[in-house]
Image (cartoon, rainbow, N blue to C red; front, side):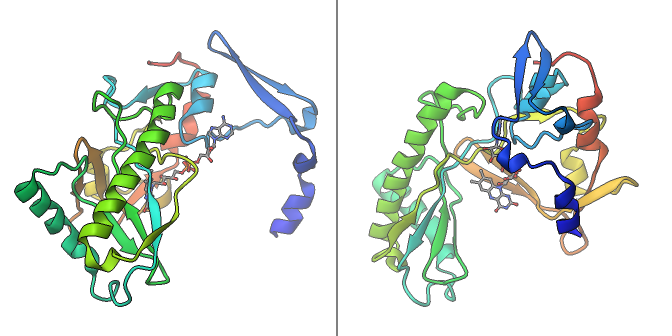
Length: 260
Ligand SMILES: Cc1cc2nc3c(=O)[nH]c(=O)nc-3n(C[C@H](O)[C@H](O)[C@H](O)COP(=O)(O)OP(=O)(O)OC[C@H]3O[C@@H](n4cnc5c(N)ncnc54)[C@H](O)[C@@H]3O)c2cc1C
């Protein structure tokens, strides 16, 4: 079925620079080399609402005052001690950090490290950084200068947190870094304002709608300054939020100006 559909597509793979967007004074121009490639519907999959912004559809950024979820640069370790995964060695790490803070005055930019084994149990992933600007505010993924700073700051935090892990957590004594991502991991930038905007209550109360297109299985995970806060559904009585198609799809049909 997929192959049959693909054969009907124009040969985009060979049509380099087939189209590009140009934004002038809130107007969106789509310049196409081949008019057969001009779609009627465009899906904004930029993660940052770039197309939404260029199209002049409504969006908002964080809390409107520079506050948004903090980004993280993750990394992967190899040669973690055999048996550490089965022993759930990650559970002891917050206590080791707390002791270092209490007894030695160490300061960590982020509590609540998320460190877990991968499928191969000697390889682990570490989600421990919280990438901030020099003033402590979260790096804004729509700002190129802040992003450039964030790429360096994330790597600096990896260096420091890995050194701590190797020195203090016995299972990581012989571990080494096997992978650092090519880009900072952005959690939140622009939110597209469709006909309906999902709320925290929708997530926690597992809202249902009659135009559901997917199911969310995650709680609220808020990467706030210095910590990660989880808010859970009423487990085991809960199931996921059923996301609405109108949450996203209608946004680009609006012709109102951007809100911010
Ligand atoms: C550190 C971290 C850990 C996470 N952990 C989890 C987890 O464990 N489980 C989970 O479910 N979710 C997790 N998430 C969230 C998850 O990664 C995101 O929700 C998801 O990746 C969003 O997918 P997306 O396709 O909307 O956007 P993205 O993954 O951001 O993809 C957008 C793509 O569009 C490209 N792009 C942007 N602008 C343009 C442009 N103008 N032209 C061409 N290309 C463009 C970008 O390069 C990118 O490849 C995590 C996020 C972070 C940052």
